[in-house]
Amino acid sequence: MTKFMQVLFIMSLIVLSSLAISANPAVTDVEIIKFKFLPREITIRAGDKVRWTNKEKRQYHSVWFEKLGEPEPDYLFPDESYERVFEKAGDFPYRCGPHPEMTGVVHVR
Ligand SMILES: [Cu+2]
Image: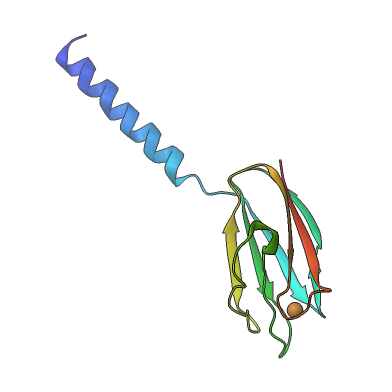
């Protein structure tokens, strides 16, 4: 390879890798309304993001992946949202901290 070809090759690698990094993950929205996660059950692809938004007028909730052994997260107040990227395939059940009857599941394929 000539020097010019080598430079061109390295430059194209840099461009390609930056494209891969900046590719935005798909975002799936889950609304928290009337003490429910809607939709309660979603299926996404590995690497995608889920965004939960509290749509209540005045009630706070949380999105707690208790079964992953995580501590209870901060409450989400009305109009606040929480985002999480799921890198690995699996089934991820979660609940609301203050309201154990509020549950949801994220299936990652
Ligand atoms: Cu709740």
